[in-house]
Each structure stands twice: as C-alpha cells, then as structure tokens.
Image 1 (cartoon, rainbow, N blue to C red):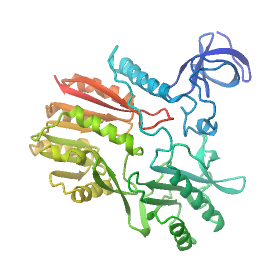
Image 2: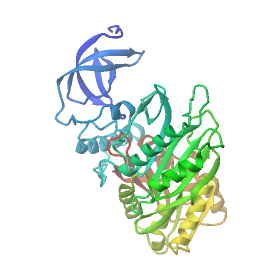
Image 3: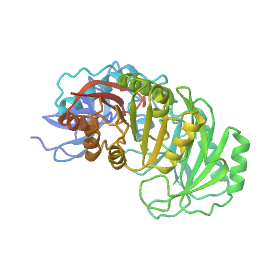
Length: 453
C-alpha cells in the first residue's frame, strides 16, 4: 500500500458520507475523511493527517460538484458542526438519514432489507431550535460568543446560528454586549479562571416566553443587578433569569447550584394541546413542531386503549406521557432528574390530569419496584439518552410481557443494539419511523415498535 505524507495531493472521487457528514474518499483502498465533500463529487484533495486505518483530507478544488450541493452556506457552520449537513439539499438529508438507520439495523441487528419508513421532515428546516447553549470565551482579547471548532475547544465567533430561533440569537448577542460593557471576564478552561462559562437561552415555541441562564464559575456575580435590569428592559418576554454555578473542569454545562436572579424558575410552553412548565435543567425537545410529529407517531404505534397501563421511562417533564394520559387508564413515569419530576407533577396538575404518577430514580430500579407492586403495564414507552437502555432495564421490561415496547431513540446505533436484546427476550421489531428533529445536522431521531412474539 502507498505511504501518504502530509500535504500530498490527489484527484479522487467521493464515494460516501460518514454519519457526521464528512465525504469518504479511497486512495488505493485507504480511506480519507474530507469535510465539505459530497458523494459523486470529484475533488483535488490534500492530505492533512494519516493514521493506521484512515486519514483526513481537505478539498483543494472541486473538479465536479454534486447536483445536491448547497452553495450559499456559511462554512463556519460546517467547521463547528452547527450545521454539518448544511451543504446538502434537505430532501437528500432526509434520504441519507433513512439510509443510516437501515444500515445500522443491518450491521448491528442483522436486519437485511428491513423496511425503514421514509424520514418525516421537520416543519421548519432552519431557525427551529428552542434552546441554545453558547460557550463564552476570549478571542483576540475580546469576550466572544460562538461555537467550538469540531474536535477542539477553540471558539469560532458566531452571530447568526442558522438553526436557532432568531429571537434567541438576538438575546445571546445582547448578553454578549452587556458582558463586554461591564467588563465581565470570560471563562478560561486551560487555567480554570474567568467567570462566565456559557449562556443558555430557552424560548417557548408557542408561548414566546424566554429563560436566560448564566453558567458561571463562581457564585458572586459582579454587576448582576445592572445586567438583569438592562436585559429585561430590552426583552420584556424574558420571564426567568437563572444562574447555575459550575466550578468543575469537566464538559458538563450546568453545575449543581442554582439561583433565580429574576422572575420564576421556569417558563411555560404548549405541545399537542397541553401546557408545560420547563425548568432550567429539564429535558425538553429542542424542535417543538417536529417533536409533536415524533410523539404523534409514537402514540399511533402504541395503539392505546382506555384500559391500558403505560410505563413512560425517561419521562422528562412529562411531555409524552401527559399528551396521551386521557386515552389510557394510568401513566407511570420515571426520570432521574428531580427538577424534571417536579415539573412533570406540576404539569399533570396544570392540565387537570389525575391518572399520571411520576417518580425520581433510575428507570431500571424503579421498574423493578413497580413489578414488585404488581403494576402490570400493557405498553412500555422508552426515550433514553444516547447511550440507550441499560441491560437490567431491558430484562425488567421484557419480564412484564407488555404487548409492546415503543422506543424513541436519538441514536440509531444503540437502538439497533437494544433491538437485538429485546428480540432475544421474545419481542419482534415491527416498524421503524425516522423523524428529522435536527435539520441541517447529522442527528436523526426515530420511533420503533417491538411487539411481544
């Protein structure tokens, strides 16, 4: 095999995309991953880096471009991963996401030619995110807000985030300018110095209510009252300003300590006709309109009846369980974040729902408790984090002999792995529906249903 050196140049054809949106090029059987290169394109490529099994390349020039290429994209969106599929036409993004789910089911779960349904498109293709988590750093001596370059912690200043609601972008810029005006120091993660680490903004899609969260290294907040006063005067839709103190050196955004600086400690929004209180640390789907499609798909797959008892594992603030509670006998929800469980209980009351029980704990442990209490679910609905389901949870779920497991997943790889575990315990995968909650990015959400054999 040829030995490649940094800065070598080749003409090559792009044959595929990685799941994160890089083009795949093979030179004498050796693969290179190339940013901003699409299948079917011919490029002149320069070698950036090589390893034992693959290397990274850069496009020097395009000899032939793809008919699906979007040419007017700001390349910072690709460099930072804000919109790592932004250079690919939207219809092709949807096709790629369906293909990605099919491939993972084939490779991991042995499902050759499984009929994965066409990806449901998001009602909005850009400016859809209802939440922003923006790092604050010093760049060339000036406090900046933006996003980290891929695989690094070097901040690229960004003003228009493209996939966020524009009202959120405006608030982020206003906060940035206030921090500059009052001489507040940005966080330096190398030295663990400075004050402001992140600005997090949540905005209700239907309500327009806004929460601003300052993530700080220490609790004492210089000029706090002046900043709060200026911000609320400029944006009367702000209903909550929070501070969370994170003194750790890890990558987690929020810290354990929370303070309410203005208003209340939640905002309210509506989804599928129900009202929800959303606290700072709670999980709430970032694309509300597409999340409604996702939940409607899950409810349709579940084929619920008035006599059904449903376990809603990883229930968050109750958005999915409460949306179908009036169609079933009882909903039991479990969630590990205490503030989210508190929100879920309040949300049940807010919507006049009396047949929903929410508890704090690990899903696998609480599930085992419920079984000991003779709570017999007909349907189990799961919406786990990216790591998928715990082995103990899968065993407990299968032991209930529920007629179906409705699985909402944000990671098709762990979903495919978990499907094989459920199938070994007597469940068959019936249907898989990808839903695009994250247009312009490589992420894909899906709903699958497994039925008792």
